[in-house]
Amino acid sequence: MSKRTTKRAQQGFSMVEVVVVLALAFVVMGFAVVNTMTSGFNAKANSAMDGLISVLRQGREMAIAKRRNVEVTFTAPNKIQLTVLTLPGEVAGTAIPAVYLNDNAAGGLSFMVFGTLPDTPMNFGNSQPINLQQPSGGGTWAVMFTTSGSFVGSTQTAANLYLTANNNPVNASLFMGITGKTNTARAVTIFGATGRVRSYYWTGTSWQE
Image 1 (cartoon, one colour):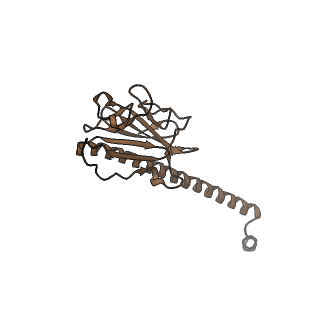
Image 2 (cartoon, one colour; image 1 turned 120 degrees about the horizontal axis):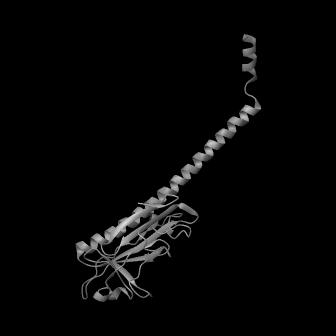
Image 3 (cartoon, rainbow, N blue to C red; image 1 turned 180 degrees about the vertical axis):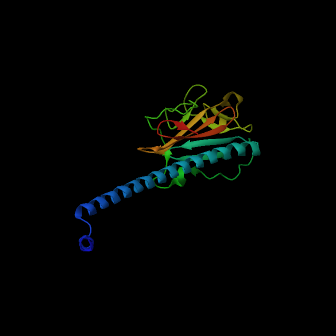
């Protein structure tokens, strides 16, 4: 019996055993790489969404605290700009630096809509990445947070935002992600009447807060 055991130990593993072990190792490594990449994309998506929420809330709080309306400009592919609208004859303050999704880093998120995904539960529209429900008409218009915290829009220009007739509450949906990667789909909505901001992420089957 001892001779057989010694002979078996000297022979080592067979080629089939080695191949099976290596195959299993590669499969495990493959899963690990995929999971790591997925986690990395999700981290980028969450960071971009958090950054957008932060700047929107900053704009609302600034409008209330300074008692000045704050215009919000969204520019594709990933830029958000806040501007304090001063009163006529008032000296403008220091310009607020623009904010970019993922700090404008390569491979970061941009404003975009995944055509196969539905609208958010708020149903403010998803026909375009920066979807602003216009109160009336079309054309170029601007949006801002007012001193009461609401989010309003004008179908004309920022210069006309102060006109009472143009201060219509605007509901907004902002969609973002990385092309071809639906797991990075994120959305932020703004309820015009109160300026409340909500965030959503795509689970693979639905939008969840």
